[in-house]
Image (cartoon, rainbow, N blue to C red; front, side, top):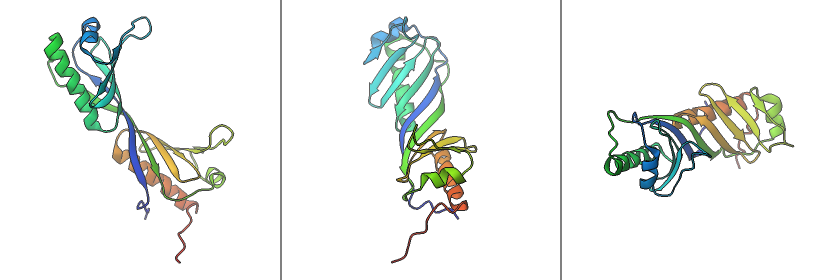
Length: 191
């Protein structure tokens, strides 16, 4: 049984792709989006930042968006709904169906709650890379659910590539299971 009691995970960033199912006139959109940049010679979309919720939206004329910087899925939904409301009221854009939101990547920071000898981890675990001259952590790839976990000697981790919070927890559980399998987790001494 994998002991997850000491593991902590916190969402740092969520990236989602969104389809609004409507063509957008970016020249009109830039006028209504606060904190925005639009330079079509440099980038084909508008970069719009909202403060509440704190997200950034890349807005394209096709009606497709990329939303990033969110700390929750609700933040993404609120940001998309805020944009739709602005487009409806101030530009007159008509929407025929609800937006389609697809989570592309979630990034978590966390702590496993114990220290590791990364040389031993790298020599034992499959699906990992460790080049301390290049990067100070082990890069561990989980196949199912698909995710990448960066493991540092302090026990701190970064998990990216997960599509949900459950996937991130499952990926960390698989890492811990592998660490246990190869006797890389030291049992706490009873005092």
